[in-house]
Length: 53
Image 1 (cartoon, rainbow, N blue to C red):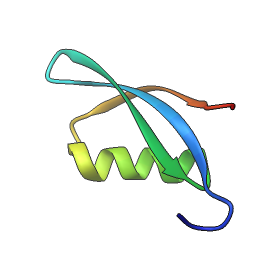
Image 2: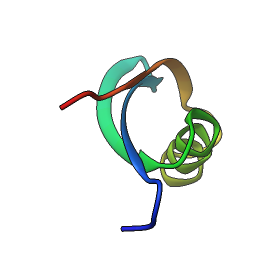
Image 3: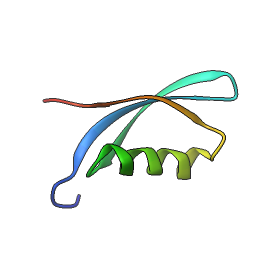
Image 4: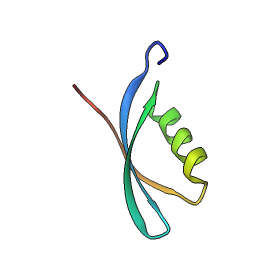
C-alpha cells in the first residue's frame, strides 16, 4: 500500500448490471481511472464515496 492511500467505494454500471467495488487510491480521480482500466471503458461510473473507518 502506498503512502496517502485511501479506500473508495465505487458504484458503476456495466452491461446493464450494477456493481460495487472497493478501490484503494490517493484520490477519486485515481479510483475512477483504476475502475475504468480494470473493467473497460464501457463501464459507466455512477458514484464514488470515500470509505470511513
